[in-house]
Amino acid sequence: LVWGALGCPRHLITVDSAFLDDHEQAVLVSPLLDQQDWGCVRLVYQITGQGSLHLKLRPDSNNFDYQLWNANTTSDSWLIASMDLPNITIPYQILLEGRPERGSGNSIAIFEIHIVPGYCIECKFEENHLCGYSNSWNPNVNWYVGGSMARESESNLTSFIILGHYMYVDSVYAKHFLEVAKLTSPMTTVPMVGCLSFYYNRDQERGNIFSVFTRDHLGLYEEIWRPEVYVTVGWTLVNVDIKAPHPLQVVFEVAFNSARGGYVAIDDITFSPEFCHTDTEPTFNPSIANCDFENGLCLYYQERAETKVWSRVSVKPNTYMIGDHTTGIGCFLLANTHFTSKPGYVGRLHGPFLPGNHKYCLRFYYLIHGFRKIDNGLVLYIYDENDVAQEKVWSLADTSRAVWTEVEITYMKPMLSKIVFVSICQNFLECGLIAIDDITVSLGDCQSTTGPLPGQCNFESGVCGYIQDKKGDEADWLQVRGHTPTSYTGPRGDHTTGVGYYMYIEASLMHPGDKARLLTSDLRGSSSSQCLIFYYHMYGTGTGILSVLLRHGDRQQDTLLWRRRGEQSVSWMRAIVDYHCDVRHQIVFEAIRGPSLRSDIAIDDIHFKWGPCDGTVSSSYLFHSEHTNAA
Image 1: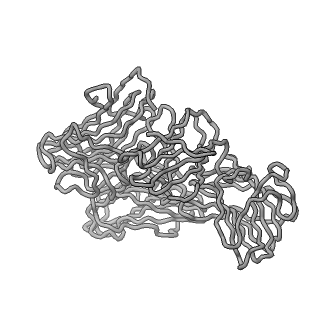
Image 2 (image 1 turned 180 degrees about the vertical axis):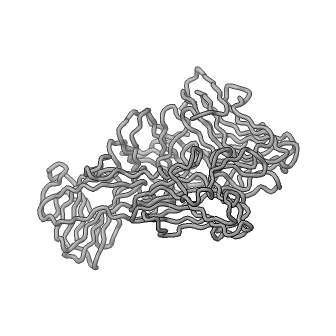
Image 3 (image 1 turned 45 degrees about the vertical axis):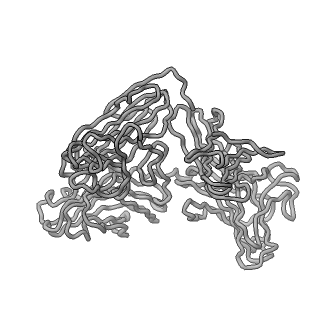
């Protein structure tokens, strides 16, 4: 389908639901671009009725498109959106996907699209769209475009001529105490670390409060600047460092005490990836606290008197004890009375110290089995630099489910601190097994984390465009959560969180030898190797066959990339498949039901990576074609 150009004297391009069939969309593709410096895409668009508009980045020779932005808000007027284009070392294309819903009067239109150098939060206010900056409307005080300096100057900093523009807010219409005016930048699409610079001109210091904030996706504000010294004459340059591990908006806020509160004007907002001040400390990388225990304890340690409580163990694939969360056959930490000479224990696992005044997102997985009393089975504390517990931030709340379960905790402390895992057992008759694995720490709020990247699917929000094969199989893959209905087969929970969704075949709905195939959407070929990583679950005495196949139009038969046959383990196992295909293709997950009802097969956490797999791979396949790869 194509976008249609309409309108006079200016043109626009539109797609209407009247010209679409079910599940169809219109895609507009830019020419191949080779702009390696930071850029900004600015889009003027309108959605009428029901529908959505998506802007994506397509790197050359890459299977997947990266979504930069999407919108589904209906509007009676044109809207402006800005999206950052970080430094890209390879050529790329910009895609606009219009998806109006079925029904009369649904359409999506684009009036302008610009790709300009620089950051989206930068602005000189010379364009009609004001770089996507928006005023939060107030009945009395608002930001306006100025063509000459309010009350005084006849020029602005940008060009020193009367025709230059800036933004200003005046108190003349203020009617209440602390009337507030806000000017907000577009939301960046990437984290911002560097120097924010701007000029301001301010009158009546005692009559107004001028501040600059950052605001994240959750709407949380952080003040980053407020003038310390009042400057009475002319424009003043401000440089302020930003260290945000998440996308943000910059908010310029002025509060007036009265109608005699003066005015504030701003101009020439710029950003640099280098810090303004040489003494600014670089952004701290909390990954020093990450550990999957595959190669030891990382920077975690136990108190000397408790060295035998937490033990690093591994479990070979079996049908009775779950292995680690990372690969199914790797290492994890286990606390158990079998490792001590006493009837009970207190086990503390200390993490590395992390600096204060940062917001951290801690994630880890735990597994519990056999505990009668779980009050102190596993507790997480924050300790200060004197090894004093400051806060209990989490404790075990549910009973054993024999599945790795994810925990997310957001915390922030003003001082140097560390996380400490504590497991207490007072009587071995009441205690069982406590295990932890895959600890990660990142900056920012856990809730602000974005969804899966292109090529990734954990089935938490649908099936990511995967397709049931309706021609060559006899059954469908099912999306479920929790335990499968048949005993002694299938997983107890998903691999992603322990309480989420996964895909599986229900053997009781199939006959022995029946097949179920799940296909990816069409993937573009690549001149480079591709890496497929996924997790599979094959538990049950009657388990059949799970295969990964390569399908493309030039071949009548699918090509085998990877296969497992029969019962493998009660754990989720990791599979790594390296393949190479330079034409359009699909990856097929094929499950064949075994001889008995205990033949459930499941998959989860599928991840395609550009380039060869790291380390040993399960299998490899190479296919070349002389045909040109279609975009």
